[in-house]
Image (cartoon, rainbow, N blue to C red; front, side, top):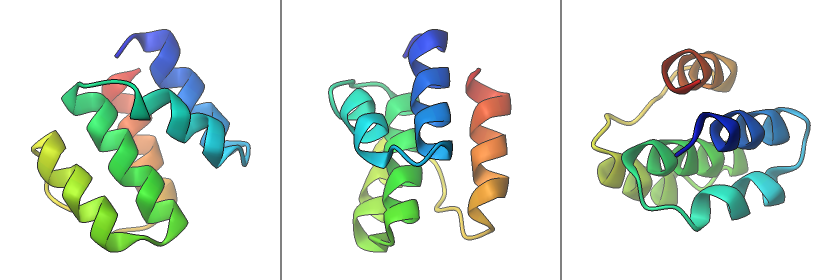
Length: 78
């Protein structure tokens, strides 16, 4: 996942455009995109789907505040 796409997806969801962020990561096949995908499904409240994407990303399920995970994603990937 490119830095530009990473930032775009994270900023889109932060600005309330979940659908656009989801479209960006849905078409990518990287662990980073899967992690963002998992986060997006947490935002949506679909925890079963989020769990699937955390497994694809090779990451433990995040259970803390959404803002905390957003910041971790941003700091790690961007």
